[in-house]
Image (cartoon, rainbow, N blue to C red; front, side):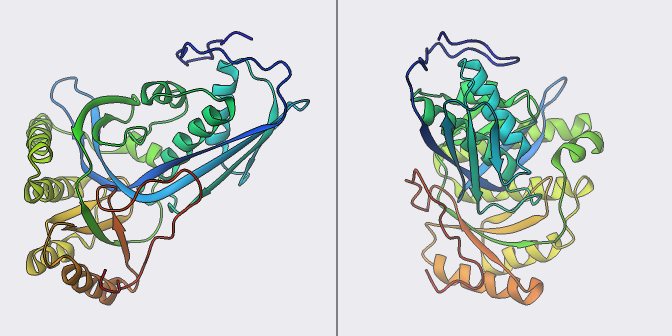
Length: 329
């Protein structure tokens, strides 16, 4: 059967033949993020954008197609957006089989760690795996664009991404080696509702965001992690009037006192983290000291590593991410 174009989905130019094909399955995974390195809007009619901070937490999707059935089910049952993404992609290829889409994740929901985006990207990759077709980041964008604003998790590098348009702005470079010691301020943030009701970003702020993006681009290309941390910190401060973090003053003080790179936040979420360079000769001790301070404040702490520091070669399963005071690693 020839590949068909689904509603709002760009064709990918590959044909899938389903005649005589039996039961088949595929697995896909996607990393999440610890908030963003930078989030704002560009001058003039420039779009809202964010800069990804990929970490080694994962969502995994497994799709099992069963010929002779038409109903596609999802587990957990509430993952309606992932189900829609799977159906859109299957329809685009003219595949009418039913089956089951199973999702597993160690990304908490509503915290600003890209749990929903990771589910969607993992789902597209699982469908591609089940159909035996390649899927590019640009094609992934086209499948997710009709569903909701999405982070740029289809790209392995750090990217500046138009999350509301679901479109790449620019690639900034490989993910730097960073550790983020984080706390969760509690509750959940609905990203769609947040974007619809946030205060206006002024022209002056847009100019500053453009300058910060240029600084970050240069810093990542030259390995200047100190500037990466400074840009993330400034973005966190600018974001206070939109999604206030009550512990930001504490984080800024600990960052300064313990010699960390900077502070990263979920700009539309509840997590706030102190960033340590993976190349710091005192990395282990700094992480331990920051985690101890965070535990004293919040009672619980997460320690996450970027893809530039953690081993990210995986295709199935979900890794265990440590929490609590680290053991000196």
